Image (spheres, rainbow, N blue to C red):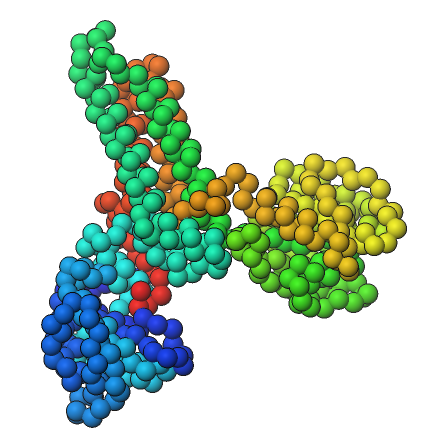
Length: 449
């Protein structure tokens, strides 16, 4: 995200609803001149009541009426951004909203950067960084569970939890530093550094799985379907998504490029990738497809390796299965509607017998994928965080665990580690966040939010 020139002194404007035909389109203006700029293009010149809708007309710079609109003014500081905000509701459609925006820009506003309205809300103290992440997650939610996680975050559940842990850490840090000033051999009455750190660690250990769940609900997981030609990979993709997404033939090597399709399983977005059959080939295009398939397997969150259960397992299959040991992988033994010739499978990976043809075992496969995706995460109580925020929480947990270990040898090292954990918790909320972090955060928003 580009640096915002003149930052809070500018009056910004953007269309806040999706472009296209609809009932209404909302154009938002925020900043010190939001009201005066709006007056230049609206017949109504006063907004006496905060938050009340007024019916008026939108006109161009020559006084020609463009549209009949509703407008509402939110006076500072009781607005989303904390500044004066005006919203103009034109009739839906690209042209009316775009004309309204162009008129605002020609009368003193500038176009808003992506996420700049929410960034101003953060800078003005109306939300913290955790709540900003909740705003973004609410916009991008793809399931009911994800939307609930966004709502919990947006209403401050994560912020309150992090601040409670921060306050406990701060109190402990103060006690440790007081004790450091005591003469050697004397201790602060009732202070149990290891015990207090352990209690704080327990709180973080309860919070982090909820945040991990939020990441999964927001971003989902990548599941790659791999295996030899004609094992039934494309048929399996079609069975999972419930429609014919990939071409299925008896000719080996039909799939050469990666075919992707996403579905929601238990609230978790899962992107499935059907890949080229793994075999040696003199065909340049097929060989490239195999290379892409192996690369996708290595980069996947979950690998579903498909075997043809009606044939003996091959050395090549066994080699690929061994490469999946210790990873999130499922062996899907396909064609259970035919006589089983494959025998036993030596692997620690989960094995599920399926028939992509008649749907047998598909629900069990989806359940296994879901369980593998969420692991120990608390999906039903998930909270939305960015990857940066989750890493800071994990870093705070590492610092506290090291601090607990070092407390047995003296309080000076423990104090430093406890202090480091406290600073990490503050960064989760965006305290003292630098421009680079804010740019990265708010560039993920759409223009107008």
